[in-house]
Structure formats: C-alpha cells, structure tokens
Image (tube, rainbow, N blue to C red; front, side, top):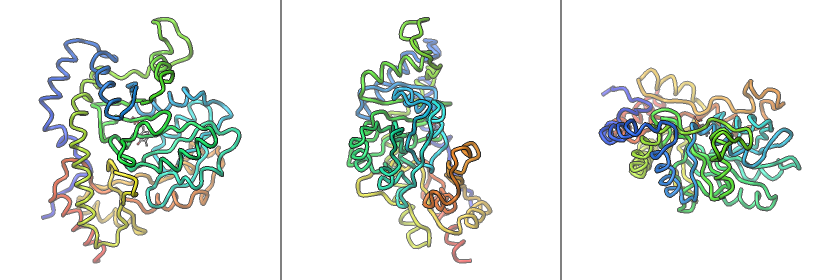
Length: 369
Ligand SMILES: *Cc1c(COP(=O)(O)O)cnc(C)c1O
C-alpha cells in the first residue's frame, strides 16, 4: 500500500456533522443576525461553561482576542510583556499592536512551552504581563508560572489558541490566567468555517470592557467611551461553532487515541516523540516529533505522499519584523534547535489506523536507508 496520507482532512471531520451544521446555518440565515446575535450568544455561554469560566466574548479571530487582552491590561508603549519566541507570530502581535515590547524567554525542551525557570530573571520594572502559550495543545507549567506572577503582581494571559479542552491537573485550560484567548481558525481543534476567536475570563470588569472594545468601544450605540475595534464574531460562525462544540469532547478523545497509537507505532524509531508532562492531558492539536535530520526526513515524507508541516521553522526573535528588538541567533538555543528539528505528522480526528501505519512505515523506511 502506498496511498497518500493527508496532513489534515477537514472534509472528513465535517462530513459526519454536515446535516447538523447545514440546519444551523439555515436557521442563522433565517433570523438574519449576521454580526453577533443569538447563535453567538448561545455559543459564548456554552464555551464559557466548557472552560469552567464566567465569561466568554466571541471575536473575529484569536489574534483580536489577544489584542483585546493587552488593552484590558492597559499594556502600552514603553511596557514589556514576557512571552515565548516559539509560537505562531500572533502571540507577539498582540504585544506589538499596543506599542509594547515582546521580551522573549527560552522554552522548555520537553514541552516546547515557556520555561518558568527563566522567567523571573527577565522581569524588569517595565514588565506588565506574562503571555505563555499552550503549544501544540499541551498545557504550559501553570503553577510554576502562577507563583512567579503572584510574587511580582503580574497578570497571566493564556494563549490557548491551540489547546481547547487540554487539562492541567485535571482542569480544562482557560481559567488559569486572568484572561485566556482562543482561536477558532478552521484548522484548530475547534474550527469555524472562516475566522473566529474568543476571550475567556472570570473577571466581570474585563468582560464588560472586552464586550465594548470588540464593538467600537461602545456600550451604548453611537456613544464611544474609548477607541475600539470591529472584532465581533459573525453570526454564521457562532451557529457553526455551536454545533461543533458538542462534538469537541469526542474529537479530543479521538486525538488522544491517535497520539497513543503514534507513540506505539513509532516507539522503535529514532524519532523523539512528544510526551505529556505528569500534570498534563494534552488536547493534541499537533503531533510533533523531532530529529536532527528533520529536513531529509521531511523530503522523504514529501516524496512518499505523507503530509507533514513544520511548526515552526523560524523563532520570533529572528523574524525580520522583529529585527529592531535587537535579538540575535543563539539567544534562545532551545527554541532555535526546535525550529531545526521539529516535524508535525498527519494529525486530525478522522485519521485512520491505516494512515498511521503508512506514516510509520515511511518513517521506518527513511531510517533503514
Ligand atoms: C492560531 C493561533 C493564534 C491566532 O489565532 P487566529 O484566530 O488565527 O487569529 C494565536 N496564537 C497561537 C498560538 C495560534 O496557534
């Protein structure tokens, strides 16, 4: 067998829920509330409950939610926010959008997440917040970071864009920070049929102000208290996400089973496999292996029709857009090595056992050459 294995197959994920989604979209068209509206409000209520949080504010993207989080904390020019160089760039955009400076701290080799042991020495009088990411769906070391944040009176913001449903000591992520931000980009564990995101918090004042900021800084129509944004979620996305949220626990369970099967199928290869820390149940957004010969392995998978992707090839401190921050190669060696060594294998809830066996076979072929 040498069938192709797709990296991701959204069609296979949507097919079983198609009728349900079609009906929800039809209802949304009938009531014509295309910006926010009842479907979005219902989704917000249910997603807040899913996270065990008091409030959820649905937005037009995860990036927007992160931007609003920085506004809620009054982060601005001259301020610093401690964050990870090894993530999707949007984590840092939020800091840049408000004119503040991302201050990077290297990651932990085992989880690819911000290394709490390095955070404290990066704190300065200008530090206004700490913004770690639950990367690949694996929770960061919440308690270690929370202790440092409390000691220095710094708010903690979770970038949970990849981690819907991940748990830390048995509790789902989304309320460990003062604010948590999610993305519903289509390829995320919970994906809209377009763009989407959410800000989750237990803080009533943050929730009220976020509600205003996402809607042009107004609480009363045509009265604008502060400069805001058009960051509303579309009604149709709320309808789709409302349906999908019911299926999310089953999708995460599937992801966990698939990860387990990859662990077994790849155990006897030279690949370094992703492992959960003892405090974590990963939501397995991605299955990321590593090996020093990553580029050759990638070429081999490409040639044999096995989908794959590199999340991420270049750390943020070495991006052209951040050249003016003054970082240089070698500043964050763990993140930089990860960028050279990681490879994400095909991973989505509808991945079959045959697919996974094929992936393992092609990987084994590579190391047998
Ligand atoms: C996807 C993602 C974002 C941005 O979300 P969008 O909805 O695409 O704007 C932010 N942070 C991380 C870690 C992400 O993976």
